[in-house]
Image 1 (cartoon, rainbow, N blue to C red):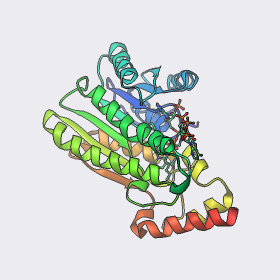
Image 2: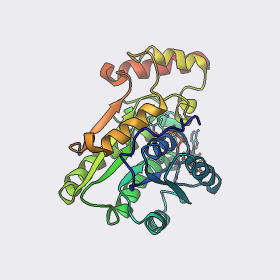
Image 3: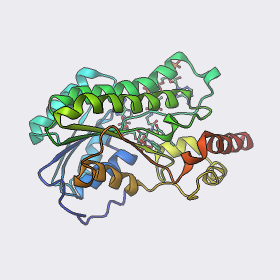
Image 4: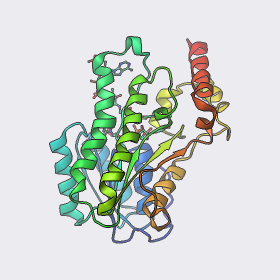
Length: 275
Ligand code: HXC
Ligand code: NAP
């Protein structure tokens, strides 16, 4: 990943950022964004190899970097990861919950376990990460950022499991914001639309034809860039974002302003043309 080696500023110097699912794609870019602003970063995902590779990469930019292999579906393992972060760095100032799974499947062909798997990773996993971290979060001043998606508000064919899970994350974010705000813990979400150079979009738009058609349903006619999501996370957790609580920031080039119809139709059209 091209991370850019220059520090942007030192807003997060002496701060610790924990990123669940932080070993690839958008979440790794978010970890790099905080690293470039002076933070210590701690990443967690299932694969020890991915954790090791991400930590090695982050050590190039972060004040310090460490990681832990755990599955967000396993509450005890998530607790162990949070404890490892606290033991290593002493504080947790920013918590990012972004582990997710996605595949395209019409609901009529989706097995019960397929539906449950995505809800378990995305929604239950987000609850696990927030719940296990809560008592360890620095307060006042801690910031939680859950990674949603525009599927939460735009129903999309082939994505019943993802739409349900991400809508649940938005609701969870708002409830936690109400319950934890008085203790000085802010809880927000970022809901990206399509983001370039990601596993998610490789799964959703596997061909150039899919991509071209989907782009026509985005008013800006482009996908988001990884760094734009990373900068949004840093904004929300920094001084300029200090009054955001319970917000779901949509970053989608205007895709969702058209409602679900245009995007869903574009994707379905491309899918039909490719089969
Ligand atoms: C139908 C599928 C399937 C597919 C898996 N399943 N893939 N069903 N179509 N393509 C079903 C399986 O048959 C099984 O059900 C159940 O799901 C669990 O599958 P496992 O392979 O055992 O699960 P697991 O090993 O836990 O892997 C989870 C996963 C996998 C989600 C299936 O793809 C994964 O690890 N993904 C992580 C990476 C990822 O998805 N990144 C993209 C995130 S982007 P049965 O009934 O057979 O037991 C994103 C949003 C993008 O989330 C938004 C863009 C706008
Ligand atoms: P990605 O590269 O596949 O990232 C997913 C991360 O989660 C990986 O680090 C993965 O590592 C980890 N992970 C997956 N299942 C896990 C589990 N059960 N326990 C712990 N970690 C797990 O995907 P991405 O496209 O960048 O997506 C990242 C986030 O952005 C997701 O929340 C996704 O829903 C959201 N999003 C993406 C897009 C997009 O355009 N790509 C748009 C909107 C929202 P391991 O394999 O090692 O576990």
